[in-house]
Image 1 (cartoon, one colour):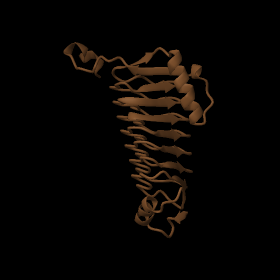
Image 2 (tube, rainbow, N blue to C red):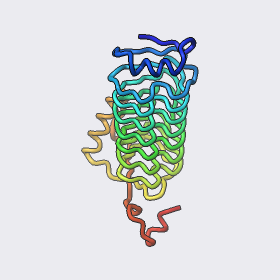
Image 3 (cartoon, rainbow, N blue to C red):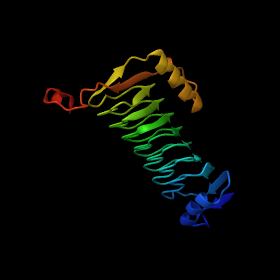
Image 4 (cartoon, helix red, strand yellow):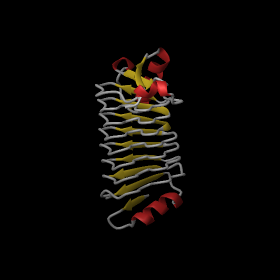
Length: 223
C-alpha cells in the first residue's frame, strides 16, 4: 500500500497506518511533516521516502520504520519495541526516553541523543552532539564517530560505546573496562545495525555511581 502526502492529509495517513492491515506501506512526499507514523502498534514495515519533521515514529511498539532522509527533533521518542532506521541525519534528542527497540541513525545526530533512555538500543553511524545519554537509565548507545561535551551526564546503568573522540564526560560518567561480554554484545549490535567495526575500536563508558543517592560528600561530582 502507498500513500502520497502531496495529496493525502497527515491525519488520514496516520489513521490508515493503524487500520490498513497490510504488512508493507510506503509514504511519498513527507516534506518534513511532523508526527508521522506515531504510536504504531501493528507489525508493519513502513518506508518514508524523504525527510520528516519532529517526533516521527514516536511511541512505536511493533513497526519497522525506515526514513530515507533526515529526521527532525525527537525521532523514535518513547519507543517500546520494533525498529526505526534513519538513513540520513537526525536532530535533537533522538530516541529520548525509549524503553526498547532499536534506533539506527546512519548519519550524525544533534544534542541529547538518548536522553533519559530506559532500555532502547541506539546506534549512530556518525557523531552525536552535547549531553548525549544525559540521565540515561538503561540500554545501549553506540557512537561510531565522535561525542560532544558532557557525554553521559548523570548517567545511571545505560552503557555508552564510542569509537571516536569524546569532547569531555559529564558528571558521574567514567570510562569502564571493556570485558569480553561487552565486546560480544557490542559486535552483535553493530552487525544487526549494518556496521562492521570491531569492538576493539570502541571504548565503554558508564556510571561511577557516586550520585545514585546524593550525599554532600559527592557535591564536587556535580558541575
